Image 1 (cartoon, helix red, strand yellow):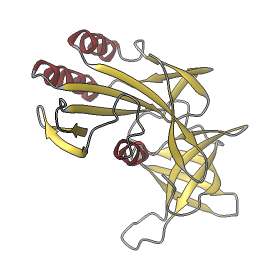
Image 2 (tube, helix red, strand yellow; image 1 turned 30 degrees about the horizontal axis):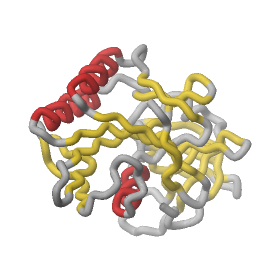
Image 3 (cartoon, rainbow, N blue to C red; image 1 turned 45 degrees about the vertical axis):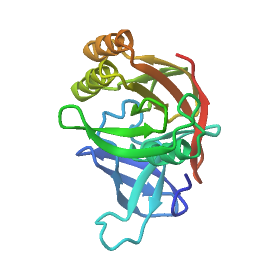
Image 4 (cartoon, helix red, strand yellow; image 1 turned 180 degrees about the vertical axis):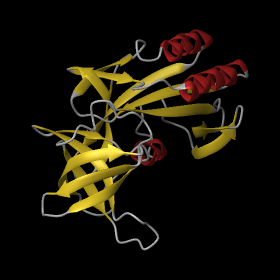
Length: 232
């Protein structure tokens, strides 16, 4: 998935109200950017961090920049826009490029299921069980090379695991797919110390037959594409 307009570098001044970030453009000038990430962004919102912003000229948008990347230096990036993974992953699913989820003819996003929830992707095809695929964006890393989820307590995440288990009991496939939006990690773990309830729900879901997959991303200021599978 290529960014629609070329990204521009800046320095983060502060993130506030979850969805706002004040930044100093490296070309000059202070602006406020939209932060499309409702999570804690633990370790990714420190003042002075180098970031990459996507400009826009959409008259319907109040803010003319969107925060897309954190630049860790030495060619490593973290994607902070939580809408990017699903857009990129949809294209990969439709092209049959996701190992373990290839071979499905129909890819439907945002399908209602469970208790007032929407599954990220429902995959279907002749002679195959429907596959309910929930996607989580992973951006936390507290140990070199290790990506973790979640970065804060998430009752919603635990609820999704329970609903995936229910799909298995009805005879469907259910897949929890963790997409690591970092280029500096090659391992993954559930952060049980941050949210023990989520960690317990994850273990129960695995026992119930929910599959777990994990992939990293290739990230540059030009594009984000699906990377390698990370073995769980």
